[in-house]
Length: 207
Image (cartoon, rainbow, N blue to C red; front, side, top):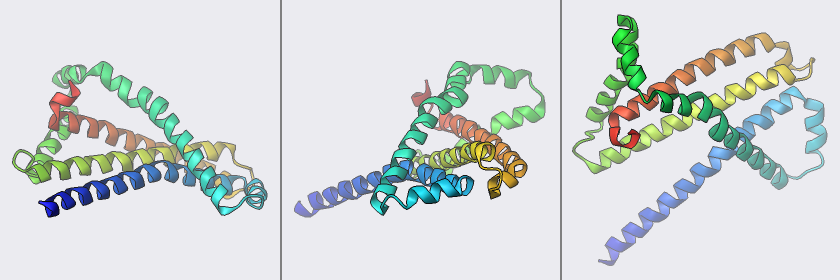
C-alpha cells in the first residue's frame, strides 16, 4: 500500500517539476530571443548595459521581458488574429464555405479532420487512458512550438525595422522581413489547422 502511495507521490512530484520547467521556458525563451536580437540590433547599447549588471540580474531581466512578451502575444495578438475569428466563425461558417468552395479548398478544410482521425488511430485514443495522455501531450507541445516560432518571427520583423543601420540585421532587412512574413503565414496556417484538428478530436470542449 505504501509503495503504491509512494509511486503516486513521486509521479505528482515529477509532474510538478515538469510543469515548473515548462512554465519557466514559456517565459524565458521569448525573453532570451528578444535579448539576442536586441544585441544584434543595438550592440553598443547592449554592451554598455551588460557591463553594469551581473548574471543573476541579467537572467531576471530576460525572464521579465519574456513574461511581458508572452503576455502581450497570448492575451492580445493571439486573441485578435486567431481565437476571436475562430470563435465568430465557430466552424459553422467554415462548413458553409466548404460546401460552396472549389474542390481544392474542400480538401484544405478536410485535412485537419483527416489528421484528427489519424491521431486517434495512432494513439489508440478510444481505448487506452495512457494513449489519451500521450495524444494530449503531443498536441500541447505542438501548440507550444508554434507559439514560440510565431513570437520569434514577430520579434524578427520588429528588430529588422528598428535596428541600427550598421548592424547585420539592418543590412539584411529585406530578406529577414520576407522570411518572417512567410514564417508567420505558415505558422498561422498551422495554428488554424491545429485548432480544427483539436475540434475534431475533442468536439465537446469546443462547443
